[in-house]
Length: 409
Image (cartoon, rainbow, N blue to C red):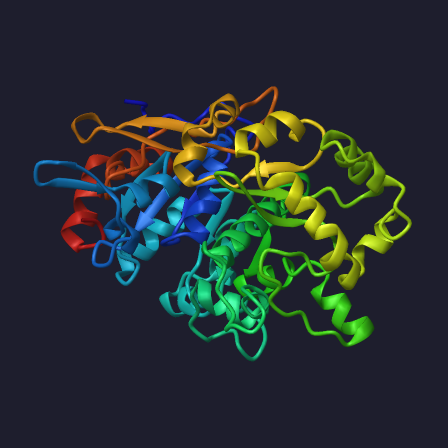
């Protein structure tokens, strides 16, 4: 089993992160930093640990079980239990913050302040601290105190209204894109603030809202509305105006075909044995093919004819290296695809008697300081004594006092 108590020798080696967050957006952000070499200390409330420890699926060994969901987003972290409702717990957090570089939390704005350990308090202890706060609506504005989940962001940020099929109710994006987008922006903001802190000794708040993050993912919808007044609506598997650029049936499933530029269209005409379509005056330019009537009446039937009688593999073999033509794969097919393995996007972590967990890897590939995603996640409070000795300077007697006081489990 890989020893998670050792920092990874990555680009962020020497950076210490305190992770107070729960479930997904915060844990995934800090886990990305851990993959890249940071030492991440996962702090959980002994009375209310990270709820994702109860999320399926589970690695099991008899009566013992461990959430694979939790494991995927908390790999490579050091685990500490700490009750911030106690005076002693607050003091422990402050002692950890003194030597930390980053703190990540995803509570509703105001929660840390109510506990007496908000940014204004912690910056007095460590002026260079980067304080990354992820929330539904952000730390400012009239909506800041509202509770939020991923679906809140999808609804309030507009993306839910754009997804699905015309003439049907909108459909949420099938993954928690509100959390995941906030994760990515939080990591970017944290790294930018960390660079500034290292250069100047001055930390700052990184304030990332799920709703803001979704708004930033709506592509052309905002400018389309502000320029033309057009309100984006569900388009199904088609693009609003780029054509052909959608899902098509083939002999054994579906493929995405996106040869919309003149260069790609002409190449497709040659590949599929219909070169005459290159010079057809009704469809010989990208702008003409974008016209809805022309596309539906002429272009779409041509593409459908190219693809319908061939299998996914035949189509990828014929055209996949020349034009954007990709089989629509199940997750099982993705996991088993040799191309996925070639990019190290399925990694393994050994949990002993519980088994080996195969999970997604780290998409950030660094040539000189590669990420180390194939590591185990912490059991609850697994590394408490080591962390408090190493990062807070406590001896065994002090740790025992904290346990007696109820600050530690």
